[in-house]
Every structure is written in structure tokens, then in C-alpha cells.
Length: 245
Length: 386
Image 1 (cartoon, rainbow over the protein chains, first blue to last red):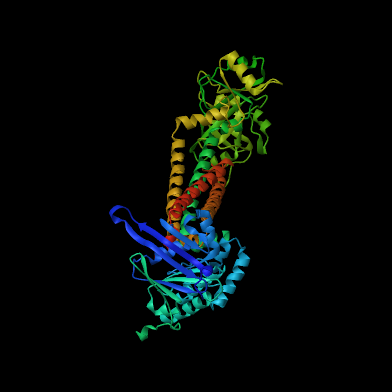
Image 2: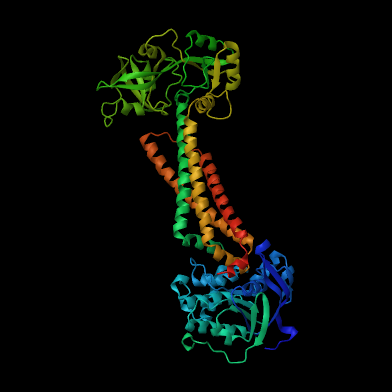
């Protein structure tokens, strides 16, 4: 990975965001600047309420900022019309949520096929691709099962398959290991590493979980709505098991 | 996405069944009550179907066929004298009491028709011969009378059996099919002269004059001519519609205006509508709220509001169609039972299910709309807030 202007995937400049009204108005993002590059795993870390998830939402195009610029793959999300922004998300961003957000009444293959169907694929083609994506996360034989039959780690692997099935260049993860034990967390992080190594793809992870910091190529620390430090990670990736603390 | 939307709906079994149950109940109440009301209104005009004549001439203040303000016998000749009239015959119509074999009394609708022409005789005989009415002390009864007037309904009255109308003997010479009367009693036909013998005497006995227009003239034009020439009220007999000069229409509207029947049935229909709306809106909204996290995730992943709205509309229209179908199926079971038992009255016109379907789908669309509004207010960024 090299940090050159040509391979910038996410370019956030002087972004501002407030929540609330009057006396309850909170300045959540204060002139935040951040760049993420192709081929890297970037982690956004910091205490609760520091604005990590708000910044992630702005990068994902699910939240409008009040000032500044959010450019993803050179596209200005801050000024993009709603319809175009929705289409942009559908084809460029893969989402992994803390609570997985798998639809319980659908089989895991159907859950994984959703991003393809959003893009207009036929259900047969989408299901074929979804099964292949499930194979890649080790759940191929269980494609007919429903999410509630799977463990938390397996559900997160389904969510990863769903985030990657349409091959988005940017993967956004919100606390992906928060609901997982150490063993499953490690499996999931290994998958992320493989994802980030795909050419021209970046992974941005918001996390509190210091067990996984070593998997990051760079870590951006936030505090009180500001990026206070961006550091490259030097040590080889390993998962800090809970019993080691 | 259609398949996924339906799987989301069917997968939430409790809410799906609740929605279907609510819409089934609404459909059943609306269609069944509307059909019983229609059947009851149809019964009010049974005499017009059983005594089929193109024009009914009655006393000028009469508004419906079951109301009898007697005419003079000479009024038959007055109507005959109108140039627009091809023929005019007398009709007696009144409620009388029949004593049956076990000594009990039953109420019947007695009809007296012209013995020469037999105008107004039953059209569908199932036994005997209507012309035998010209024999002494004879009557033709409808199928209901054959069981209702029998000592034992399992052994219905046959041709040749006898009973008494106001203590005067009547011999059955024919059994026919007829529409049920509004009062629920059977119809008995006899000649006009014999009907007057069966009935306690009064000064005026003629109930109506049955008439037909001359060739080339419409019943409406002839009726107007009769009214102008005689001062009597002349109605045409075509079937319920918009024409106030039609006796069926006039009769039905009289019952609508002057009885509490429409209010009674209308209240039940409105309750069905309210129950359906309340259950459907509440349950569908709860379904949307339960799935808001997942729908929000779909929104974040790039599904447009339009597509999500389509999914919700499809889901609500589907439960609406299923609930409506089951409601109509149960209404048909009820109809079968009602027709077999010959009561309560039941008439399902094609308009009733069409209107009910529109109402049910309307309820579903309102339910979906509530969900769509809630979903449109849901910011996709909310999905990141656990």
C-alpha cells in the first residue's frame, strides 16, 4: 500500500456536523480531515460519543454533512442528489453492521443476495452468486438455513458475504467484532484482511475493540469530534485473545 | 425483490395471520351483511316477481307493493278504457290465515288473479296445472307452503291435499317455485273471485290492476297515460334501478327511507370497516416497526424509497387479497347455508364483492402508507446506531 493522491479512496475535508437544537445542540464533527487508501484496512477508534459512527455514516453516504467535503472514489457525496447517492451506495459500498442486520425470515443465501437484487439482478443469478460468496466465508453448505440457526460469528460471516457479494470497492464496518468472542473475532478479521488486499479496495472499520488493532494498516484516533492522531501499524497482525489480558 | 418482500411477510407468522384475520373479518362482515340486506330488500319486491305484469296500477298514495290501499272494482274498467292499455286485470293481494291439519294457524300471502286470463299466475310450476285454478275451491301454492302448511314438514303437501283459509276449504291443484315474501310467509294463488270469498268482506277489495301497454308503446309511456286518464298511480315493473316510476325501485327506497333496516345493516358494515382498518393498520404498522432495522439496512445498502414503498404496498396488497379471498369463501359458505335453509335472505350482486375488494385494498393501502411514512422518516444512518 502506498499513500499517493492517485490511490485515495476516501477523502474527507473539513467536515462539520451538529446534532440537536438550541441548548442541546452538540458539535459532533469538528472540521474533520481524513484520507483512506486503496488496499488498506483503516480503523477509526476512540471513546464512545467521539463521533466515529457519525464520520463513518458520512463516508458511507448515509448522512449529509453540514460543511466540508466527502469525496469517495472522487465522487462528491456531500453534494450528490439523494437518488444518485442511493445508487452510489448500492454499487460502491459494502456494509457490515454491529448487529449483523440479517433479515430473520430469509435464508442466509437470500440475505446475501439482497445487494445484487438491489442492483437489479434476477433472483436466480443473485442466489447463485450468494452461494458462491457463502462458500468463500465457509458457510456454503448451510445456504438454506435461516440466520437464527447460526452462531454470532457465523452470522457476521454471512454479513461479510453480503457486504462483498456485489464486489464493492469500499467496505464499511461498524463494530464488527463487538458481538463476537475471540475465536470468531479472529476468523472475521482474517476475512477482512483478505478483502482489503484485493486491488483497489479499502476497508474502514469503526471499533472499540483493542484486540483487533493489530489488523489495521492505519489507525485514526478520534476524540470529541476531531481526529487527534493517524498512525501506521507496524507489528504483524494478530488477535489479542481475552485470556492474554 | 417481490419474492423477498413476500417471504418477509409470510415469515412473520403471527402478524401475517393477525392481518389476514382482521381483513377476513372485515370482508366477511361487509359482504355478508350487504348481501343479507340486498336479499331482504329483494324480498320486499317478491310480489312483483311472483305476479309478473308490465304495469301495476294502484291507489294514488301507494309507494310500495306491500302497502294496499284498496281500489273500487270499477277501477279495472277505468284502466281498460285508457287507449294506451292493451289489457287490464284485477289483482287481490293480502295476508290471510290458513288452518292446517293440526289445528294451528299460519300466515300466508294470498293472491287473487283473473280466472279467464290467469294474468299474474306463477311462471314456474313444479307440480300440477295452473289452469286447474278454474276448478272450484282450488289454489296453487309455492314450494315453501308445501312444507310450511304441512302437519309434518317431512311429508309436504301434495296435489289434492286440502286445508282451510279463514275456515273455507282450499284444494291444492299445483305447486310452484316463487320468491319468498318479505314477511317470510308462503304465497298462495287462487282466482280473484275466490280470493274475495276467502277474505273477510269490506267495501273495497281490489288491491291493484295489472296492465300491459298496447303494441308499440313502452310501459313507461302507458303508465303515464294511465295516471293522466285515471288519477291512479301506475308503476312499471322492470326491476330495481334508478327509475322512480318502477315499482321495485319505489318499494326498495320506501323500506330504505321508512325502516331502520339500512341503519342496522349499515352499522354492522361500518363496524366491519372500522375493525378491519384498526387491526390492519395497527398490525401492519407494528410489522413495519419490527422490521424497521432491516428495512433501514436495505435503505443504507442502496435500496431506494420507491422500491421499499413498493415492497410494503405489495405486502399489504397481498394480505388484503388473501384476507378478502378467505372472507369471500366464508361468505359463500354462509350463502350456501342460507339458500339451503331459504333464510336469512341472501343476494350477492357482483357490485358487493367489487366494492368490498376496493374497500379492503383501500384499508391495506392506508396501512402501507403509514409504514411508508414511518420508513421515509428513517435515516439510513440510524442503522449504525445499535
